[in-house]
Image (cartoon, rainbow, N blue to C red):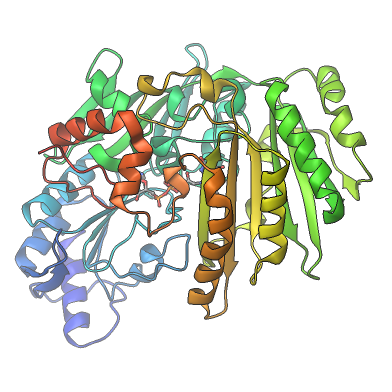
Length: 491
Ligand SMILES: Cc1cc2nc3c(=O)[nH]c(=O)nc-3n(C[C@H](O)[C@H](O)[C@H](O)COP(=O)(O)OP(=O)(O)OC[C@H]3O[C@@H](n4cnc5c(N)ncnc54)[C@H](O)[C@@H]3O)c2cc1C
């Protein structure tokens, strides 16, 4: 931030007015109340804040700045937090400045890329938000089949740029999600059974460590760090760029939804579970239990077949003939289009709470339990059930930090609301999940809820936890990056 911008802010803040632009009078920035890493109150000297602002190429936003309100919000409206500072980074050098400032002041630190954290960890009250949103761009090397992504980029940017060359890698199912957060914590998507997790396809990364040093991670350089970045989330530093391995994927896929009345849900889910055991890797399937606006329950299965269409028609025929569907939209469509097909259902700004788990098996009784939890819930939620396996499970558990490889299905329940009754929605979804939880073995940290304890996270990382904890001690011994699925540094 430029000095004159600070000045305007300081005057506006001291007068209790929102800051709306530059002023011409030079005044120092006032001292700023903030929160330390441990949650204690601290006061940031105005002169240090001013120095940080002068050292950034991007904006440094303080409360009262006209861009502060928009920048502080993340996708999940449940987290209405107010950082003391938002560093809108434009590149690695800004990230280094922000990390150094945070470390030197022992300041509570949140890292935001696409802002789609379910658990609200990419923002904080009273700390610094290191905001990578301005750092967007994807460069593709079609010959080497590589994509180089700046970590403020969204999934639609990754898909669009790679598909221009008939290439793709696994990305999530809602196109506005940040590529960085999704990839570092794993990355499940329509191509996942074919190409593995998004993080399995990461071959290089630039990372600003807690010491404020930019390091590169690849198989030949800091290979231990690359291992940790493949599923260990934001624990080891701020990742400023990611290099992905790409695969040939025809821009036209066979995709769409088949929808049935909920009375047929048992048969549909049983079919999905059985077929999931043997279906080809080129197929991504996901069932959803949803409520129409009129309050009618439905079951749907979304398919995405990413290989030869004639073969796909055959593979999908039994699903499409099942029972009496209300509609069937499966048809050739662009991969980029199916990748934004779910966007409207989960818009930014609403309040969201989710529970998820991987299932080692799912029998008839389990299917009935999921259906009963959905239909009998006191407040409505959406449930997803997807076959897992394929390439996800062909990577040995110890080969990357990501721990959940050997399960057969993935289940996710999402409650969303705009009324002021958050406590009720949370309690009801927790109650419904209690019925499903015994079926699960492990969970996906990228979709974990804010109450997940560190003991539960440690347990979920299983035999990879000790290695992660040692890596944390190497790259972030003070646990500066703790607003995440946190791995404390080994003592
Ligand atoms: C609508 C929606 C749909 C989703 N669909 C899928 C899906 O299909 N598949 C799937 O796998 N997941 C999915 N997710 C979960 C998603 O993977 C996580 O929410 C992920 O954290 C989002 O990344 P982000 O960059 O947008 O999040 P942010 O909120 O910006 O970041 C989340 C966390 O990631 C870490 N982080 C982010 N960027 C960096 C960085 N550059 N360096 C270091 N740490 C960083 C930080 O700890 C941060 O708290 C979905 C989430 C939403 C909200």
